[in-house]
Length: 246
Image (cartoon, rainbow, N blue to C red; front, side, top):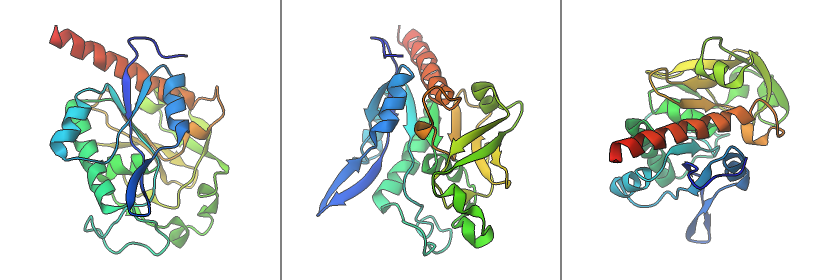
């Protein structure tokens, strides 16, 4: 579905990388493609400026997609040393992302978090993180390689209504996992091993995070409904804001 003239604007964050001494935004196009196929207009968000600058950016957006990324600098978060297997997110990017989540949720902005993005949503609410699954689950390797794995969706959740199934096959690329959903969030899907695979906030119109990568699933799969759900919620949000302004 191609975006229309009144299509909602969906902010998309990305990775902070350096080429030499120059920091750059690295944003895989598959995220933007998924937003556009769902009828939204993707807008890249660079981890630059301060809270006031970020607030102005968010005031112009109708929804937010938090992409996958590296691991958390747990020491910076006061949650113990970084695991040897981790690739920590640069400090300025991690700080920016937590502020991004805080301001977006304060505004009631529809949000979809993917992999790192899901963990970011829950950890911003105090969720605990398992830094390296193979330490506790030696058979956890399949979740890091991109092989298809199955997840169970909790009945009665928003995620269940969005996907329309109780179990589905997904693509995972993670070696870390949430131990819980965080304050105000609930677990809406688990792996067959029992790990947290999705979270959502019941008091929010659309605040959902999934540990897997729906943008890597084949076109026409149930995972497409996640992006359509985000864009649909963003359209509703934009319409409500328009009514207030007029």
